[in-house]
Length: 328
Image (cartoon, rainbow, N blue to C red; front, side):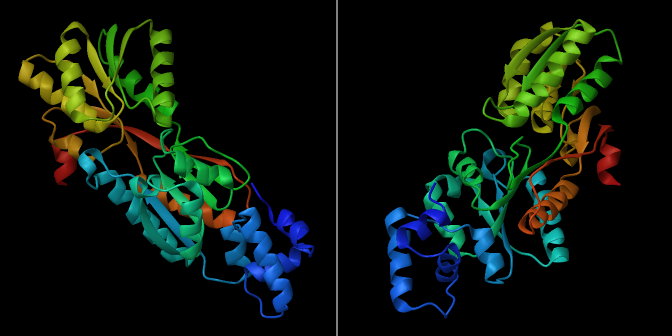
């Protein structure tokens, strides 16, 4: 990728002069400005948005990039994410905009860089990034923006990862479930193959299976309630318990078991209030999505002020969701 040094060399000026032209400083001659702008156009140079915002003393702006929930609607998790992010941004004096991931994925990386530049964006908070989101991954790899990525293990000089320990959390909730009876055959309904968290949670489940000598059947549920219902209907009768990589899938699995008039313990992952309406008590991993979003916004603020990328592990809790928990 073209750097500011390349532009300076092409235009025959100092790096500081290129910076002045990019940030529209007035004390640059028209001849020099034209030469630098010609070099920028020739080399397809895109200035670093964070550096431009800081050097020109613009108000720092952050883009919150979220993915719609199942069925394309805003779900409980995203609402908690946005609530925490807005509150943290307000406390830190940051201006924020919200961008839907599918919209960003329709554009190329240079197009999104240019769009964010026009919006004076210096930082990104990306929620639930997956491997198929090539534009968003390209934005992170470009290092043109400071980024805090939730639930994707991507760390570089300008990007940090914020998440719970998904492997350990999956291990913990399944271990709690399996410890309540004699269980050997476990049906595990995983998330989507393109999800970073799917790989981590599957690793935790496999570790538990090795330690407890469990017979593990793995099926991909795609974080879909419908798909979890189908998998449960086909396989659950031959297993002692059903472990799901999300609460949405756990609800689908439990409802299908009730329709089949058989009982199998089920556990989920996330801690959604919807679990209380599933009809049976279920263990789940409670994540503080509001707190995770707060931490992510605070982290991108730190990065925008010169911090280095790092991994931040947030706490999780194993709980048993009941209807009484929901109505309190």
